[in-house]
Image (cartoon, rainbow, N blue to C red; front, side, top):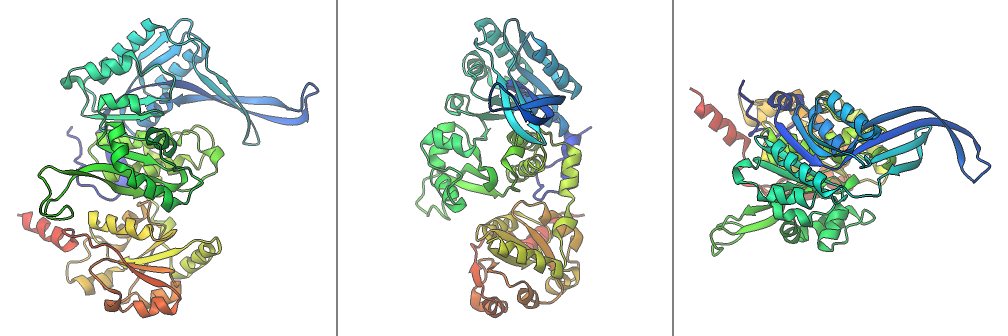
Length: 520
């Protein structure tokens, strides 16, 4: 059966998650394997030996961790997963490989090493609060023979795969013979997509990966950049954007997706520059420029809940790209997967079914005006700035997503007000909208930059603006404040009008005309 063509997908919906499962790309994972333990108990007294609680352990739950958790997430999203890594010939190693096999992961590339201790991280919890984590890391490094065997398994597992994902968490097991083997293999044996998720990306620049996923701390260490999460969001984003050239050069990759924890992500790319546009007519042919291509926003969670969110993120990103989704859509998908798991306790897995439920959330974001007014009152009470924009948003395209991303960056909460079907028809003419209100709202609700969606049926947004009183009202660069009937209503409510950059060559009408012109 032929795979679905996902290259033109721009918005996220439940059907995208189902299509990924249908595509079932083959993904080879090589990485540091961990057995995560979650021990739940109760405590009612302190020990006599020290000022420490006595925990009576009631249950012990074990799940794959590290690269093993990434592999399980890949399998849960529909990928056919081949895994290469090292475990000891011990109880933890046997338990880990059994868990992986139960999740459908091919473990034929997992090398069991006599005398090696399988890395295990056991959390002791009382009332869902982690009291202590016990790490069993082992004292001895992996022997040379085991590393050579792992290098052979990694290259074999990757042959014929749609994607290769390297998960290097700094144990030192991967940056010797394994890295050498991956670099030295013939081009024909290299998968079409190579993704690296590593604590230290510098050694992996030799591999020339297609995509890397450092967090803010890893970027800081890589290029000497201060982007700690104590800084304001706009400062962190600006500093990473200014360092885009250095980050891309240091990683050896064409695409860097920087994860910013509770601030979401930003995607850095090296793209050709249009000589007749931003670069000027005198720009040399073939010139490229590093730039921020895309931003996402995260759903905040307590830190103690966030175990394994990065694994879910890189797994969904890899599946999306391996199945043919556009880069920006894949990043949105990955953000959705991370948003799902950070709301859960422990090392969690995001599945296709989880994404279907999450992406089919029109009812969560599509609100009536009265309900929305109450929500926005709460947002303002929490000190957040409300941004409003409106439009038809029929047949979502890159111009729309660029515009919405810019609008979100103006404040904290983005509300998108949709023209209902009748008002869209009055504005756009017969045959429009192509997609009904519920479908348009559903696609917008799946974008991480959109916080609330509502609708209105009047010819202008003036009545709605008077009810919502936005702090900022955003419109596209083909307008001026003087052209907008809504400006007076915004100012009356104490708000400001902001005009965003104009995104040329992206028109819903043009897309519809091309589609109709191509139809027999």
